Image 1: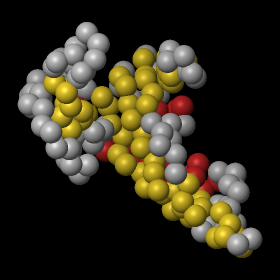
Image 2 (image 1 turned 180 degrees about the vertical axis):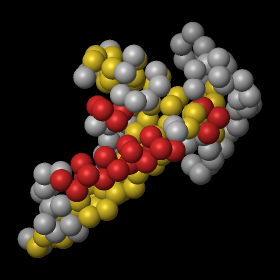
Image 3 (image 1 turned 90 degrees about the vertical axis):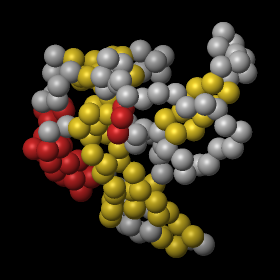
Image 4 (image 1 turned 135 degrees about the vertical axis):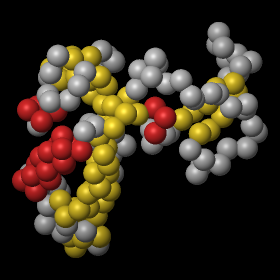
Length: 156
């Protein structure tokens, strides 16, 4: 996958794979692949303005406002933005997007089998849920970097 990802421009990226369905034999039967996105730099984000904080949070809102009550920013408000807000991401070229998607499909088809889910001793279809399925990575000069357990970027 390094070859395909190495074609991306410098920047930080998201690779979102979710809803991985495992059949009763442990093989991946289905998954959702969300388009690759490059995080915009702070210079590219000009039209996003913080909203005033509210007392009600609706989980379906794309932006959630919070009041900061502790630390150096206590007494201020901030906006939590979900990773799907297009204001914070730049698209990846369609041809490269398709090449990466096709590679992900090949990898998922040939992935080693998972341990199938069971119910009352019988193997069943299940969903593999992992919050971060290798979401974030960085590319510099066609070299791939991931975050280690200390929060530092290391070359892969």
